[in-house]
Amino acid sequence: MSSTPHDPFYSSPFGPFYRRHTPYMVQPEYRIYEMNKRLQSRTEDSDNLWWDAFATEFFEDDATLTLSFCLEDGPKRYTIGRTLIPRYFSTVFEGGVTDLYYILKHSKESYHNSSITVDCDQCAMVTQHGKPMFTKVCTEGRLILEFTFDDLMRIKTWHFTIRQYRELVPRSILAMHAQDPQVLDQLSKNITRMGLTNFTLNYLRLCVILEPMQELMSRHKTYNLSPRDCLKTCLFQKWQRMVAPPEPARQPTTKRRKRKNSTSSTSNSSAGNAANSAGSKKKTAAASLSLTSQVPELGATPNRSLSPGRDGDLCQSAAVTPAGQFKEKHGGALKGVPPSPAQRLVVLTGGLSEKM
Image (cartoon, rainbow, N blue to C red; front, side, top):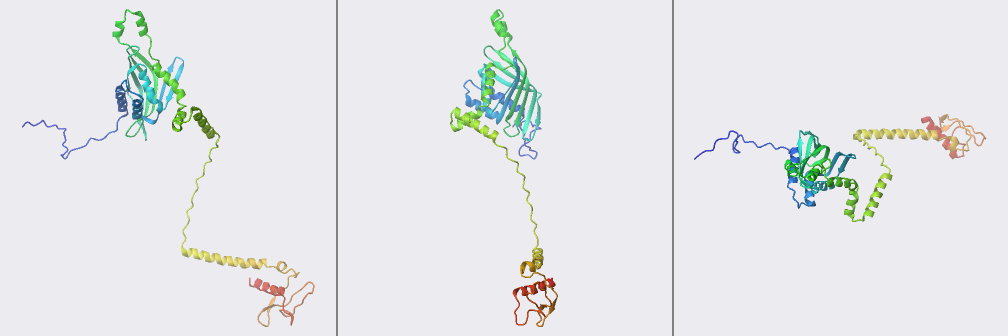
């Protein structure tokens, strides 16, 4: 029985030194490699559903794609949203391209809390054209990508700034048409503008109109309204948002915590408050009870020197009346005449003031 040679790096799963491989996150450049493979698997029968699935796999729902380049009439910058990204890639192949892939060299990665940014200053978009003639186009520029830091790792922002491009024609084709000046003149002309076909450029110009109309299209699709009604409702809602005043900022209410007092302190404080209130009531009653206000028929205040009477009651020894209506001697009232209510009130008020 022949035994296989022993591998020094082999570790049996049943041995004491078995170790699992450490899981790792997929690198952002590997996602570009997967996107290139998916683009190469495209067929001539690929429809809009295939391109929607492609965009869903590699782009976020709120992703944006930006292209910046300079044409003969000046610099251009086009930004399209997620709904227009599938159509952008399909127009590249509709312009005569048979193959498309991206090459990243010396890219720099920066990790954030929820995203990963890839900055590649030497990015090349390579397209292989089959018509009008066999040509290879290399479009060079700077590519900045922002990936979401999750399991899917899809692209959130795509910004490609084109610096230069080159169109390469095989020597074999030039040798075949070396004697035909018309074909050579046609081969010397560029088939792209800054590496982009006319189909792609026309679509980007159209996106300038289509991008603001995304709200109208979604409203028409959701509510089945006519284009005129969709435009009216959108304009009315935007007018409402512009006219409506901004809501004032509400100040946060600070809740005060209630102090918990003991039962004894509560009872003591309530008893003290009751005593203070009773004393204050007595003082206010005595102060507010004046003869001029309560007894209008008495014009002068009597002498309030009181002396005990025969029956132990407090009696007034001398009283002065202005008009001589009545005259008191020893106390109380005259013999045989009962005291009037005014006299009783004077005696009572004098007693209370002396006690106070």
